[in-house]
Amino acid sequence: MSPSPDAALAYAHENRARFLEEFKELARIPSISTDPMARAEMQRAAEWLAAHMRALDLQHVTIYPTAGYPVVYGESLAAGPGKPTVLIYGHYDVQPAEPLDLWHSPAFEPEVRGEHLYARGAADMKGEVIACLKAVEALQRTSGLPVNVKFMLEGEEEIGSPSLKDFMQQHQELLDCDFALNSDSGILDADTPTLTYGLRGLAYFELRVSGPASDLHSGIFGGVVHNPAQALCELVAGMHDAQGRITLPGFYDSVRTLSDEERQELNRSPLTDSLYLQHTGAPALHGEAGFTQVERLGARPTLEVNGLLSGYTGAGAKTVLPAKAMAKISCRLVPDQDPGQVKQQMLAYLEKNAPPTITWELEMFAGAFPSITDRHNPGVRAMHRAMEETWGHPPLYHREGGSVPVVAQMQDLLQVESVLMGMAMPDDNLHAPNEKIHLPTFYRGIDLLIRYLDTLGKDQA
Image (cartoon, rainbow, N blue to C red; front, side, top):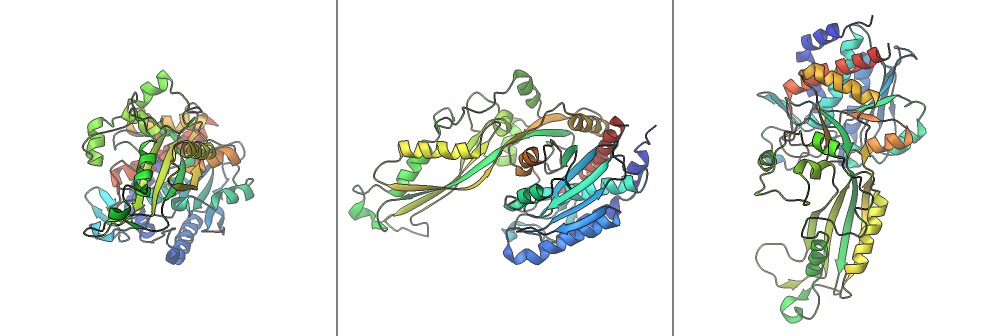
């Protein structure tokens, strides 16, 4: 008979205070991957994690160099060849903390206020990395790991994981596994266990429009020369119709249709219109006609303007007709869209609609494929049971609006599905000032991970 996880759960509960202090240690390291001045801190975070893995008696702990920041690897294969192997993915890099003046406590001086720990990276995703390590520790120190475990922790997720694909291609045998566990996800609220099974992809563009050779006097030339700022706004405005649908030619051709059963499951979500308004501060909601907010956020593609720049934007007045205008545009993609095809659709739209009075150029900065996991595979079923045991009721299934490119890359390169879970909630200020994590949910997450690994081991007993 397989051992019970009760001893591991008791160990985790008894050591919560120490777990929190170690969480704070990692959160104090300003591992900001986008900042070239933070290279030493990135290395320090990698070394902290490697030392922690060694202290947990993991084997072959290695800091692998890449073209960018290192990948930290460690494994325990003591459960043996008859048991599943779980590849645990995480990232140790974080977003910049700016604007610093909006933080109520310093971003890299973790502070507990009420039930929350405030720090940059608390919820995205140092808390989840610590939870995975602590679940493994609790099992190692009591009944033993019931499955084989491998850790792959990268330092470039916040800048698009540019080195991870090459790392996985070069180390496919090392990373061989049955399931990937990715905790870079979230939970809808503290009382609603959430099993994420879909992630949107991304196509990110910069559209540059040019007109006259230099800025012009708007009084002398206005009405004679087409203003690039106006032309850009007209082009961008035309990318949606009156129903909120995206007008790029063929944009919806490969979008997977939601079944009635899946729509019903998604709309069990507690995220009501009033909650979206509360979280965003927007005066009203907006989106593609014919779909609920939950469907729009996870199962429908989008096109959003992320930034606009043109002309004079300083104080006071300057009557200028600008020579150039620029827009940054991102498309969130759903199965089975291809970011390369979306670029061609964007080009086709511009070629058809851009007037001859301006010139334009389009540059694609990033592309990531969407991913979707079979809700009925053994890894997901085990997580379902572990969540139900931990919360006392079954989880909701959720399709996340954001992108985690590694999930699709693992499907392609390693031929494995990812089981997605996490502890970040919609109001945890990810990528924003005063990022936080709800500590009762963090501790519950450790319990969940203990039960998940235990359930996987019993399924293969």
